[in-house]
Length: 298
Image (cartoon, rainbow, N blue to C red; front, side):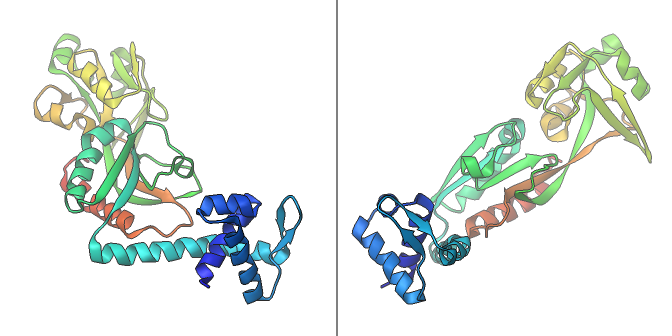
């Protein structure tokens, strides 16, 4: 009898609280699940469950085994997947989260290039400007802009995003260009509310830092929408370079206060703490790390 089947039956029974529920989860008969658990107890020489007519409860030995067995089974499954993918190429589904504008401008195209190399791979990209719960929503890896305070995730930094002050030539012709950061208070400013402190713009020059509180008629939770308002001449905006790159190149937006530079924020790949990443996820993160530097979006 296969010890892996025994362990799977034990874990399913412990997690569901009954042999019947475990059998339904595993897709086998109630009798077979009970048989696998009994064989595991004989193999180990200890009782793992206290059985009653209604349910089963873990013994101290069962609690010890449950603390380690799920991770062992996950590692074994990932090992088989890695070996299989190493010979056949990647397959299955990768579930990815990314911020809306960054996902549209960069991540979608990067994933398209990655998927060209692995035709059996399915990509499930979910764009949202909130920090999704990776465990609850089944996300394999999230690409994030900015820092995260979550202790349950690991982070691999891919690069740093530069923030810039820009406006349209039309706006500057009508309203003038600010000569110093303090003059921003006299201008119409378009506020991107996705930022942690939307109305507080931090600028640096040499070793000096100045923080300006701004006002504006337009508050939007989309970098792309803020960019469109700026190109329409509605005010000055403080945005990541990746969101305004094309409009800068096309002359629809120009830099403001060029001797100052804005904040930098990390761009990172984030995944759950305590799990060994499948090979296809590790390969995707490596691909993104190289690709993001050659894409000229930072």
